[in-house]
Length: 360
Image (tube, rainbow, N blue to C red; front, side):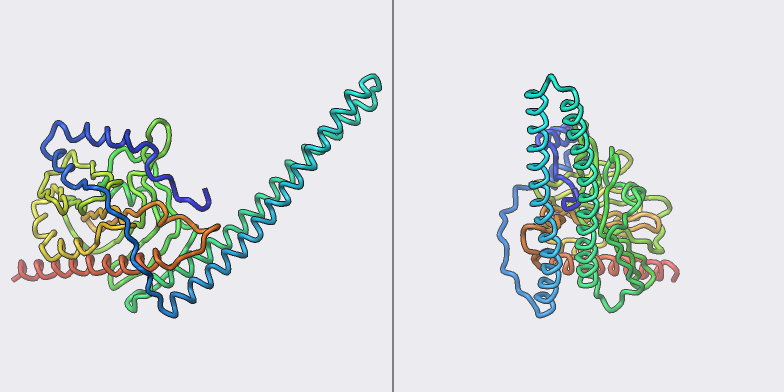
């Protein structure tokens, strides 16, 4: 569980049934179907690496190999210990059978078996603790390095990367994307400011429950931004045309379908929604391409809270151990972060312009 954020969908068939049921009765449920699309053919483009990219790859892989070497060593030790325990237990059992009439042999054998089991249990706990500590060193190193690589914008102030940090559930729930969210799990947390906007970023799974198992409705990189943006308590939510594994937005009971087409869907209870989602803003959002590893984009605007989630494929968030760390997905993260910043800039600039025109 240290190296995998979560399983994508525990039961894709069940998810599909749930989605189908929700869109049968109301017209706005039907609009959700328009954001589903066929599977995107996975064609990975060649990686073009700079000297910085190659250096980052080499540094992280060196740390990965340190951890892997330690983990492999522990596996071998565990095999030796397990073999030794089996030998001792079998020998003790044989002695008990052969010398069943000699009481002290039975007592010694039972005592030996008990001691071996206790020592094995204690050594296992100690070894696991050390393994987790070494894993943490590797994970922290990787996240620290990749955060500094991704968030290198000259306008960023007060960058703080906290690999074990997490985002409170409320910041995902308040965005108004999904219903029946049981909890969120997050890691790889970073906080910084660009101008007057505060950014909280993390890898996040927004989980629901299916057949008593947690299954994410959202799994990817989540941006929660605090900005001076008034909507009088109203909310607007947007989803870019989605990949096959995408879950359509469903926290829409009190929202009106503003627009639903082959490219995106937009819901809102804000009478100013069309002013917020200007054509310029929508064009910026459409610059995110639904192609591997990106599954969909969800975007929310409400009072002083702007939220943007990039739903990625499972492997995007997995931490490499047996396989080499590749710069590919980190490059994608960097490019997507720049798009996020552009979206926020357009949103705030448009709002500022409209406010000034209203004042005149």
